[in-house]
Image 1: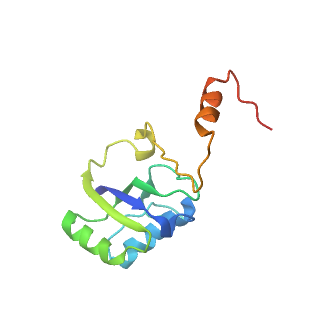
Image 2: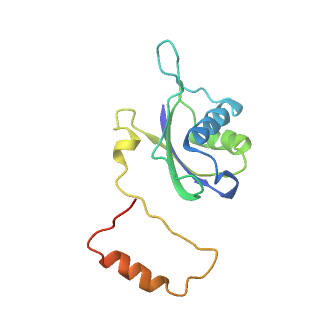
Image 3: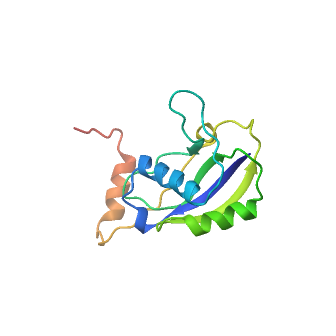
Length: 141
């Protein structure tokens, strides 16, 4: 069984790296006693895939994760188990069953939209943005 989970990464998990977020989900599934499917071979890994790496320090309102289970389960039972086991900083959005033959989640991602908030006001921010967008090149060191 393959399911797609939509979740939110909130302030408590803001400075958690992509790899640590992956580990947090793995531990959450174990705490929830859900039957994860594992890869074959010398060093089996749980079949958990995050859509993309979120930059460190960012929160998110719509992260995607695909996970495979060894057996068929009811989505409502999975959601109930996950709600009880989720760490602070991860809020569960929605769950849906996905066809196991569907392409990998990472290959399906087409775009991301970012919203930036500044702690202090910039009096000339509009002018700076206009100059940046109208520049013919953006050199960097």
